[in-house]
Length: 251
Ligand SMILES: C[S@@+](CC[C@H](N)C(=O)[O-])C[C@H]1O[C@@H](n2cnc3c(N)ncnc32)[C@H](O)[C@@H]1O
Image 1 (spheres, rainbow, N blue to C red):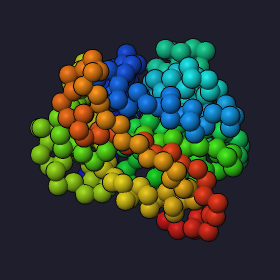
Image 2: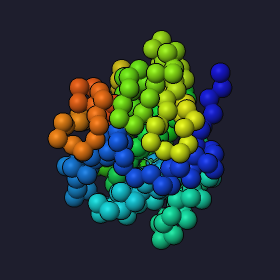
Image 3: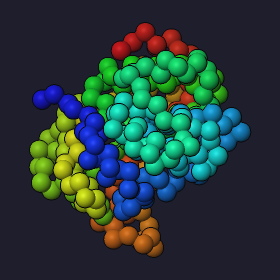
């Protein structure tokens, strides 16, 4: 089945524009300030928010002190990001091409949920090479993705019970999930990619993974957690350019 970027859609973009960090999403963003500051502070403030959507993650990066340009391939998302934040810098990009950004020009790239929507391994490789090109030698890429487990469990604000086929999904297969606390309850289609596959892609594109985080919820937090206290729904990778890029010709 052909994969369609479900974010190329005005209704979904509107729903995203109203969303901050509710429910299970809270856990995605909860630790990011600490993680980003631990790994990227003092390395410069020029950032790209790759796959910025309606600008939630771009505004988040601005707030923690980075001069951030949000980029996305969805015209609907970019239009809404600009309307919500007229002072912000949001740019529509062609898939896999960060052309206007110079080599070694960005200290930090943040990609929150973007790689869940890049359908093929080859597409992920192409984009990671481009992100590597624009990162400074000491720059950091912080990538948050959905853990495969998210597609086979129930959550405070996501449901997958209507999609039993998710259980048999292999790397590269389409999986479906519904966000339960927004108006737009149509299923989102993502592409599953497990930890081993991500690590292979990182090393074949000249990245070294320096830390991996799997955030778990705490009982004391003000949400009706379902599985979040024992299963991490998200994975956060912190990457830097590998010292040797002899593997760059692969993939
Ligand atoms: C789930 S949204 C996340 C938006 C934002 N990062 C946030 O946390 O609110 C994923 C975004 O990635 C974008 N996207 C998907 N494939 C992309 C690609 N190849 N290049 C750039 N953006 C892409 C989608 O259009 C969508 O806006």
